[in-house]
Length: 96
Image (cartoon, one colour):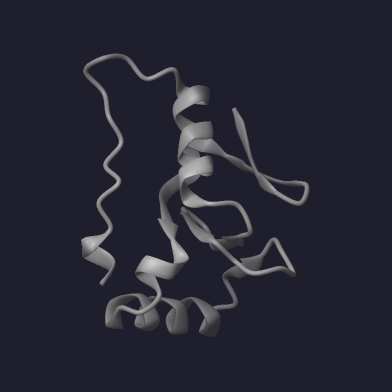
């Protein structure tokens, strides 16, 4: 299934590795290094010209979205129809 991430951009939910809040994660040293590397390989796609609120890491690139990470995660949960024994971790400490 496809997940709408804002401004007519869709991403295949099976390709999503992680969804992160840009305000909480962008200050970390590891995140800055990751973004620098992705920019060098030209794998960052801005889906909004407005203030970015989240970034989505996929198997092939990183997308910057104007939607909140909570909204995108909720769309993924609704799309995948998670069962009671499945979960999504919202922990972002690894990116700091």
